[in-house]
Length: 332
Image 1 (cartoon, rainbow, N blue to C red):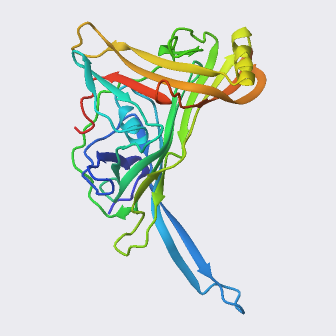
Image 2: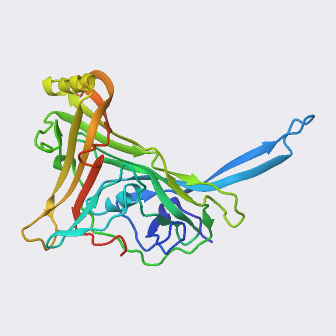
Image 3: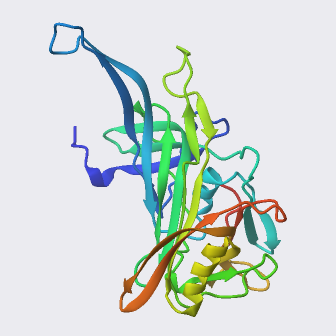
């Protein structure tokens, strides 16, 4: 039998119909990776008079997988369906599939869960109920974009056979030179005042879901996932000019701001009339929740701010993500 080589370990996913019920994994995401690993919690008991424990017991078992990759206009809808809210695209123009994600502020969101297969011909594993608990996306003009997160799943199955002949998408990468960020005082003015001296933009959503553990001998892991109080923040680094320092004044006054980040590809969506580019748009009501030090950034004197996503009663939500691409469905 050949050795299990790290380079041969492929990852495939399937979109579950019922959370926790494993499905075939015929999709190969080519811009992001998942590395599931078993996680376990043990307890031990040491009676009086002995130096060493007499019982070592497994209390609960699950799986976790870091997510890492490069953001693309087409594959990004997979993690967004898993961490924000499950949605289906509408036809915004001929051949334009518009994915609009509107997570609720006051009710539970239904999201997609995934079955993950990882391995190769020598050995392979499977994890069901893959739920994305954290997601981040970042851009700066001096480095490659960053995209990552965390997935939680049920107990890992071993010795499985991976789904044959997985398919992938034609990738359209997001480039730093395609990104603009706007910050305005009102919702009506959203997207009109560009931050022309913005050095970096990073969105991080975490603590989105957690496991529910129950006493049931028919279950080998958690029964399902539940929503938690999320942390939803954008960190920006701006030149400490008059515009950048005005954000400090907004923090002092407790002013609400409206942030919009737009990435627009140079590539057009095939078959569109008129020609329409791939795009990604993030909109949010924000307030300053943290102030970093004034410091040097490649010769530019800059200020760092943490903007926390907040609910807006007039808008009826806190944030929205819109993706225009040619992906009609999450299943191949």
